[in-house]
Length: 63
Image (cartoon, rainbow, N blue to C red):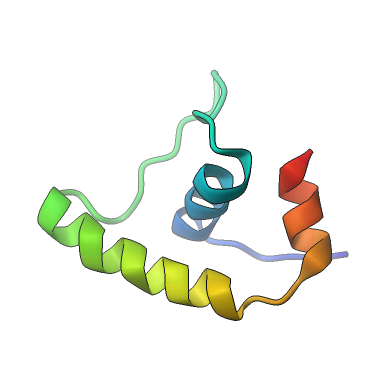
């Protein structure tokens, strides 16, 4: 398997599937800087995630 995720996609997948904080020493800063930017940005990521029918990707993040 080979996936190419940007930081926002990775952070979203981590929060949705792993449902935990990203472990130290990793640090991810999403492109949305304010809450007003985050809400629509997160909605776009949810749409992307809902249309990503890749079981292997979901399993990889579930570990």
